[in-house]
Image 1: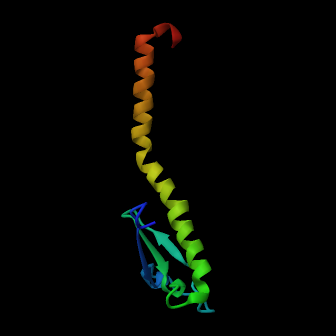
Image 2: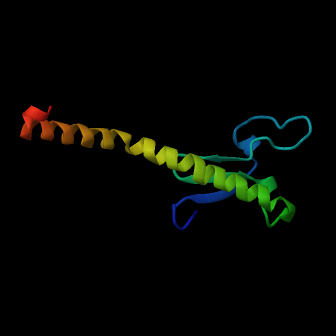
Image 3: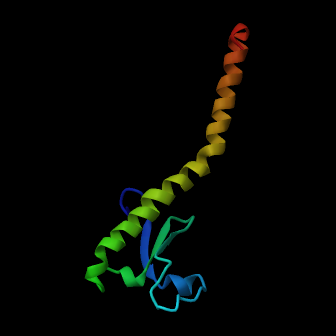
Length: 101
């Protein structure tokens, strides 16, 4: 993800980062987040070097943030330009061929 999507991946205490207390059982329920600057933060409890048994959850969370949320954000950023291009194309088509409009 870092190489191809140009996203930065870091570990942090996600509850502290968002100023939300952990649940009474102490297990994090905020496992990851993606921010507009292209950074993905994963809860430190999922660091596969520190907790190898959580590697599957780490991979899922990373895929969820980078593969699920990032494309939607990217498309949303380009929607105004895409809409303008479509309007321009339609206007040009009506101008060149008024009978088809």
